[in-house]
Image 1 (cartoon, rainbow, N blue to C red):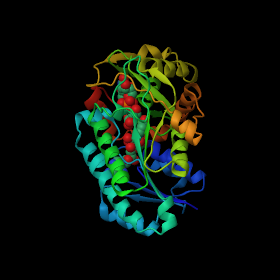
Image 2 (spheres, helix red, strand yellow):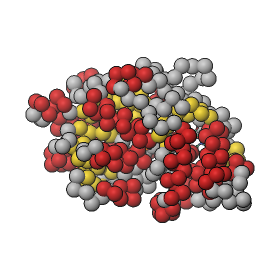
Image 3 (cartoon, rainbow, N blue to C red):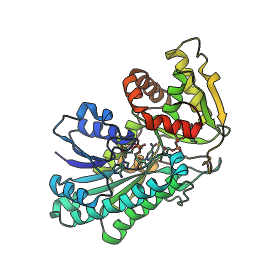
Length: 355
Ligand code: NAD
Ligand code: DAU
């Protein structure tokens, strides 16, 4: 049985990855600080499983990381722990620098010492996979080709700049020390267990409560959407078959404007939540002040991972969004508990409305 150290495994993508890894028989050591975005409810089905060991802690805590590595001797590390919300990075970038750059540095530096001392076979097979974002490449014009693995880095927000910084460090540990690191850059994920500060869950929950649907600017910014489990399948495939030192772009080949996404959610909800006081849900759409430095368009060319590793996404937007909306409608307790005091405070501060 393989053992992976997964960091950030109580968050959105991390928890979906932990669940998938367990399904595939991988033993998981899960290191997560449980910030506002980390949630043990995401891990309910595996929390008492002896092959899933949860440790509350910081990736920047060298002593803790060292102890975990020496105790559980993982065959690989998948680093997802991060501050992940662009709007929060605009209000308050400190935590982004601390976790995404300094935290990743401490984690990889300890991982390097651990890797150096592994027996030959285990050393050869070890992988450090750093999970990054398409936002490091900046913004595309409408006619530009999608980002590929050679696109120039041009991050525009404190969040994407901090992710770019961590990507460079991870690359450097491969080039300088020969450590078997891999970077993946993925487009916008959606699916169950996403913290409702992000576009899709925010719109679903506001719509079913008859609250305004706040769209930044003119709603014409484009994102390339991927269902979270498809991303997680890609990550486990990269751990198995990816080549050290390489970068793999992951995306859903699904470019949509924000307005299209919100209107699609509204149309699905008109059927699933036909309360006449809220139908049509589209009437709740409200245009609000734009995000500063708002990237116009992201799009990912995922030919490399498709051709070299044989990956392809299994969900299209229609099936994926329907599954996602149904999950949020069914999991009322999760929603209630997730919208804690901190969440309500964020909604008040950022949108000036009640959360
Ligand atoms: P998330 O905010 O839902 O989860 C982040 C998790 O990291 C939380 O559980 C949090 O408690 C944990 N964490 C934060 N700081 C930590 C620290 N110092 N030590 C240990 N744990 C810490 O984020 P997400 O959307 O699941 O994103 C996960 C990763 O994937 C991030 O690195 C993000 O940059 C990347 N990514 C996200 C997307 C997306 O669309 N959500 C797309 C591409 C890449
Ligand atoms: O592209 C990958 C990235 O996708 C990840 O690296 C980030 O961690 C993740 O948060 C996400 O970043 P975005 O900024 O694209 O996601 P967000 O859900 O915040 O916003 C999606 C789009 O919707 C963006 O153009 C801004 C817009 N938006 C967002 C919110 C929260 C609105 O119009 N209104 C909103 O209230």
